[in-house]
Length: 304
Image (cartoon, rainbow, N blue to C red; front, top):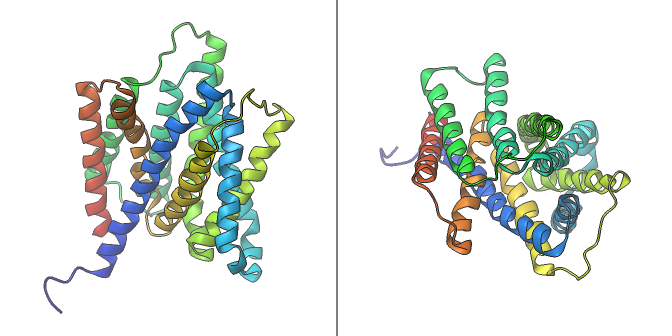
C-alpha cells in the first residue's frame, strides 16, 4: 500500500463532518429567510415551519418515495415517528422561546445545551471517551457560539419574569428534543439509508407541524409572499440540509454531529454582516474562530 494513500475511514469521517457542517450552514441561511417572511410578510414561525417541512417532504417523496421498502420500515416506524416528532418539536419550541424573550438566550440554550447532553449520555454509554481534548473542544465550541450570539441577538430587557421563565422552559425543551433527535437519527439513517430516512422524518415533521393549527390557526398575510423564499426553505434548508445531515448522522458520533451544526448561528451572523451591512465585533470574530477550531479538532479526533 502506498504511504500516501488516505485510509477509507479517515475520508469517510471527514466527509461526514463536512456534511454535518454543511447542514448547519444551510440552516444558517434559512434563519435570514425566516426573518424576512416573519418581519415583512406577516408569517408566523409555525406557518414558515409547516411550509418548509411540507415542501421538503413532497420533494423528498418524489425522489425517494418509490424506494421505500415497507418490510424495513415497519419495525422502526415507532422510532421514525418519535424522531420526526422531535424534529418538528425542537423547531417549534425554539420559536416559542424566541417569541417569549427575544432571540439571544433561547438560541444559546437550544444550540449550546445539546452537545453537552449528548456528550454526557455518550460517555455513559461508552460511545465517547471523556478526556481533556473532548472537554476543551466542547468548551471552545460553546464559548465561541456564546460570543457569536450574545453580540448579535436581542436582549431580554423589558421582558417580565413570567415570559422569561416560559422562554427558558421552551428553550430547554428544544435542546433536549434536538439532542434526542441527533442521537437516534443516525440509527434510522443506517437502517433505511439517508434518502429514505430523511423522507420519512420530514413527512412526520410536516404532519406534526400542521397540528399546530389546533392551538394557533395559521394567519395568512394580506399580500401573497414571494414563493421563492418558501421554495428555498423547503428545497434547501429542509430537503437538502436534512438529507446531508442524515448522511452524516449515520457516520458520526452525536457529539461531533451537534457541535458541527453550531455553524448555523455563525453563518446567519456572517450573512447578516455581508448582506444587511451589520457590523461584526471583535468578540464575534474570536467566537467564530474558536468554533471553527473546535470543529477542526473534532475532525482530527474522529479520524483517529
